[in-house]
Amino acid sequence: MGQGSRVKRYKDIAGDGGSNIAGQVEAQHDRLRQRLASVHAIVAIVSGKGGVGKSALTANLACCLTLGGWKVGVLDVDLNGPTQAKMLGVRGRRLVVTDGGVEPPGSELGVKVMSMDLLLPEDAAPLTWDTTVQEEAHTWRGAMEANAVREFLADTNWGTLDALLLDLPPGTDRLATIASLAPELAGIVVVTIPSDVSHLVVRRSITVAAQTTAPILGLVENMAGLFPGPDAARMAADAGIPFLGSVPFDPALAVAADRGEAFVALAPERESARALRRIADGIRVTLSPRKA
Ligand SMILES: Nc1ncnc2c1ncn2[C@@H]1O[C@H](COP(=O)(O)OP(=O)(O)O)[C@@H](O)[C@H]1O
Ligand SMILES: [Mg+2]
View 1 (spheres, helix red, strand yellow):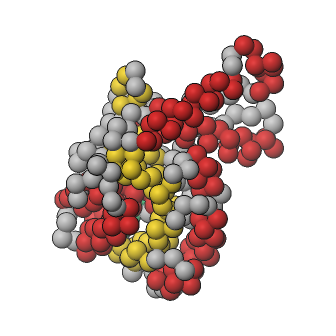
View 2: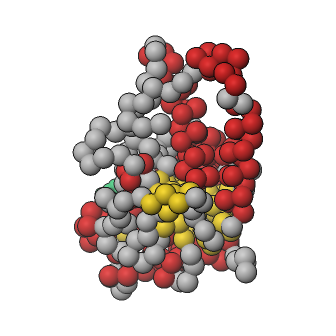
View 3: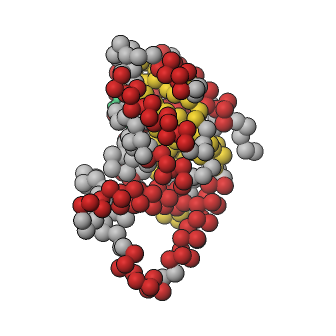
């Protein structure tokens, strides 16, 4: 895996070349299980829509939970457009590899971050999935993404965590892959903004989320007040899922995200920071009790 990497295809290794693929897969599944055994709750932040603030919410909720005393990790599942290293201020940190796996860098508050951004050299082209023929690109993307995310989950030295937040790329199809990789997914948070266009797409995301075995923790409305859009609480009620709250549109939040600063710690009294805390508290209550 890597920038423009050419992934070996099964026929390239006909007869398995003595590399014991089945054994390797089994070993990786074991590693994944072991690694996640010390993670209390894995939560996916999703939206079919891009640009609604999934990543900013993930980073801020991680900070809120950390300030509340939890040990928190964030895995950036957006492999093509990773933003968590930037938002949590760990961009350019060198990764240290130990026997136990890769040490995730910690943000100023101590949020552990793993992202494709930490693996790619500065200003490198984004990750691409090479395929021999273009028609296969879509299928391969799904399979390669799943592999990359499985590796990130299994090979990162997360240690003991109360919560591991997964920042998903936009797209309704992504959640099914993640749900199959992390069968212990403790919950799904769905994000929308107040526009008909967003609601149209996000309603489908809720349907997909409901088809997984993971509980839907609820819907968050982000960028509230930016447009005179439809009522998110109403959409949540119609879909039969909890409404976790609204985060106002706040330029200060965007500035902090661009600077990699912990907004909720720097400006705890702003309305948007209060809203984020209330949402994090709601999530914390649902995910408790913590493991000892
Ligand atoms: N409540 C908010 N107020 C102001 N800006 C926001 C808010 N939420 C997110 N943003 C900004 O909007 C942009 C898109 O957010 P991002 O989290 O990258 O969206 P997504 O991950 O859904 O694509 C970012 O620049 C982010 O800082
Ligand atoms: Mg994002």
